[in-house]
Image 1 (cartoon, helix red, strand yellow):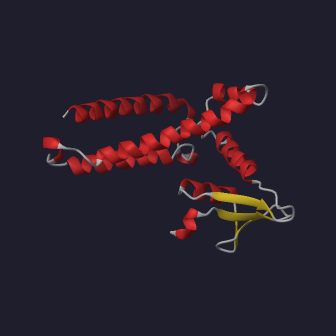
Image 2 (cartoon, rainbow, N blue to C red):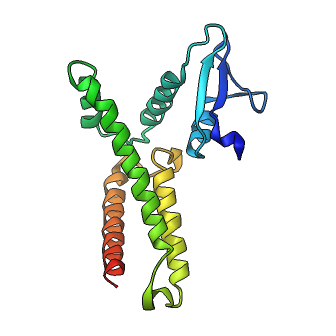
Image 3 (cartoon, helix red, strand yellow):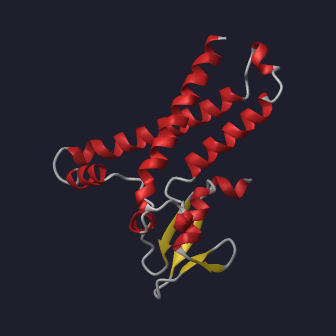
Length: 183
């Protein structure tokens, strides 16, 4: 779609209401977060001054998710971010974070791409397509769902168990990928 190539323009009125210029309706921060999760770039502009407010609103979305217990950023990472606002780290941290997330996106794309190319005898095994579809869905949800668990997510005391299960699944996927690469 041609519209997906350019950022979705959101205008903030003096009343602080946010207006979606494509659909001609008002949107919430959660709507904007959904656009972003769906892969859409957004740009939020103050109607009166013309200032770009995108960064401010993206930080607000992250802060709201974190405050609801949908934690993605460990406390030590947040602490390091605060420290990076002073001194020489201020110039290095943005490039480091951008490069890290780019590597994460590339790795995710590469993993999904490789999962569709199972060669040799394993590629003709009954049920391999279902396994591939299940793995793709899991990885897609894992990557897209960071911080979007909402109130239906695990209780804080269950978070450690869930992390252990996720680590075990990651280990199994890595072992599977290693076996596949050897074939």
